[in-house]
Amino acid sequence: MNKRLLALLFSLGCAAALGQTPQPPGPVPVHKVPPAGSQCTVVIRTKNAATPPPAENGKPGARTPVLPVRLDIRVGKNGVQQRTVTYSDGHRRTFYVVGNRILQPYDHSEKIAVLSADAVSRSPYSMRGEAFPGTFWIAPSHYTGRAALEKTPCDQYEADGLPEDDLDANFVLKAWVTTADGYPKAVEMGTSVYLFSTPVASTENIQLPPAYRAALEKEAKRLRVLERLRAGAGK
Image 1: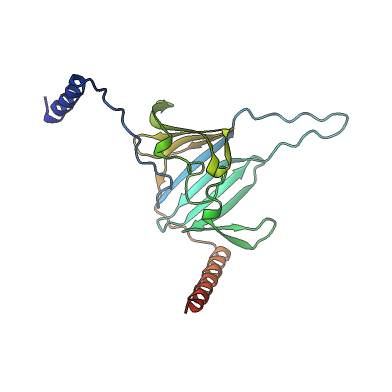
Image 2: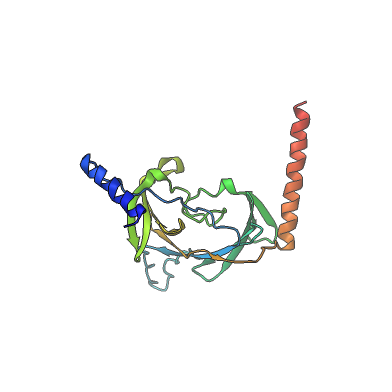
């Protein structure tokens, strides 16, 4: 019998002798951001989706809402993220995440908007920001124990509403994080379900298209000007 097993049996025996129940394992550290040099996919489903009523008396029925159904994430070795959202009507939208900035086209325009990730990353349904979608709320205080999902051992989390994010108590959040590696496997938020693939290695860098690179450089120049003005005002 090896020393490690003897030590384990000794600790369990001591706990039993003292009338103590061995404590269940705590949660593993959660990876909320896909690592540099990786790619993964998030499949998005809607529970209990209602079917629109059919047309009546020649009038068109209710229009089926257009919802995101898939998110493809590529993270270059240089840390730049490319995210492509596929919607239920088949169209796609691609944007980039560089540090704390999100770059995406304006609606119905070829111009590129540069947004602060902090302003959008805590939105429950946001596909933007550098983190895995729907994981912003996961914390040790919401840990409920171990559970298997599709035969995969997971750490489970659950919360009923998040007042700080304007989510009432009827909005139930659940998450399963793979115990072996700490990556999210599934998240439920209300009627939305996110199913995550495990990130796989990628050796490519992500290069910004020229229009995105120009927009980022313009934003950096604007911030430098603001910094000089603030420094001058403080003298």
